[in-house]
Image (tube, rainbow, N blue to C red; front, top):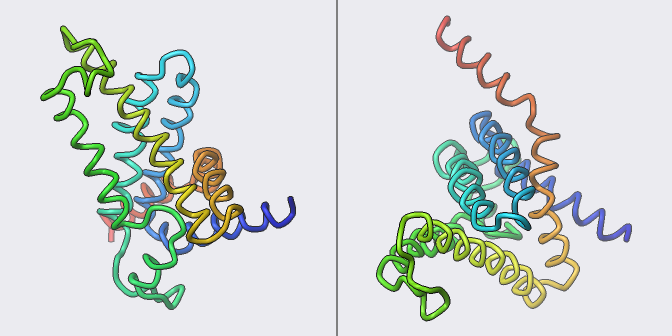
Length: 197
């Protein structure tokens, strides 16, 4: 158990130091974490709604922070190139995220072209049913993406690394709130200082 917790701490530290330099990214992660907790609270009672919140609010804000606000050049603080950071990333690096988000973006089109999703659903008759089916498909994609990478890590590294990563992902919202709760205020202060300078 000690090794598991130590590995979890290491994965969290690497994620923070390599991928969360920007105050905007940290603030978006704080917002994302809160909305993920809302999604978590709904997942058993209203799974489709939970998935819609998880993907449309939580994941979009979280990934926007990485793609648009995080510096991609040489990391002076950690003395690491972006290529190095991408190569050592345990979970979904930016390239893997592009693939995952591309599949995510294709799901609404699939549901539109084939409303039954290969016989999985009765064809939707209105927007409410469409959104319900979309949420359920996105929930399956989220669970599938989590399990796929976890099992993938079993073979690439070892079982513990995969289980540690899955634990990290599932508990990231709690950890991000603890870590980044001051970031929105610090961001606001830095923006104000920039305006008055």
